[in-house]
Image (cartoon, rainbow, N blue to C red):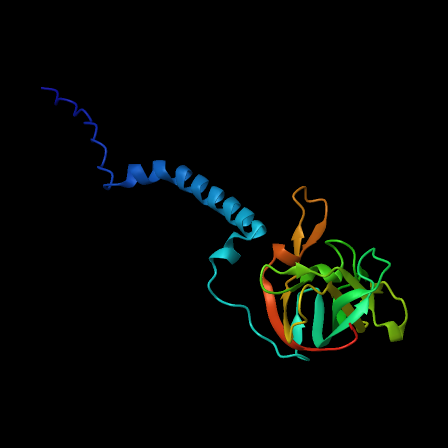
Amino acid sequence: MIPSTQQSVARPPEPRPAGARSRSRALPTTAIVVAVAGALTAVTWVTGGWRSQSATPPPRVAPGGSVDQGRFDVQVINARTERTKVGLDNALVPAIIVRMRVTNTGEDTVMIDNGTSGFSAGVLLGPAPGRRAEGARNDPAKGPALTLQPRVPRGIDLIWRLKGTPPAQVTLNLHEWVRQLEFDHGGYLWLNGKDTPIAATVTVPVRQGGIG
């Protein structure tokens, strides 16, 4: 008698741990969610969303103290009232003049006052959101320079037209300068002014006179 040949019996598949299949299917979805959240975070940061949500006030620095803006190192020296030309006006008008000592800590030369790319764009007169300076100049006693060369400290006057009664003091919001890759990856740009967080605030007394 020929012994019967044993037939191999197919084993049923081992049971998969509970939740394994759902996790494997969820991975692509999770990756998409993370990517979208990252993109939204970047957009929110650029548009200032995080700043509006932050309850932490910026540090206060005393006059003469150094403030690192990321692109400039700044010391607010003093403030005074004076009659001077503001903007394109030819007539002398009452104004607040704030003297600063500014060092360009970058590698490129920067205009003192040039729209959103000049040094003056990053200093706003409080209260927040603040007023941009209506004029800026090199220390008149040092000549008519228009730029800040790298690593060369300069005395700079920022000018705001005086509105109403001269204040006893003014508060300046010194905003960070943030270097960011352009959207087309063609180069870098600097964000500043109202588009970036406040690095520090400085409150300085205003010396009265010169506007009568």
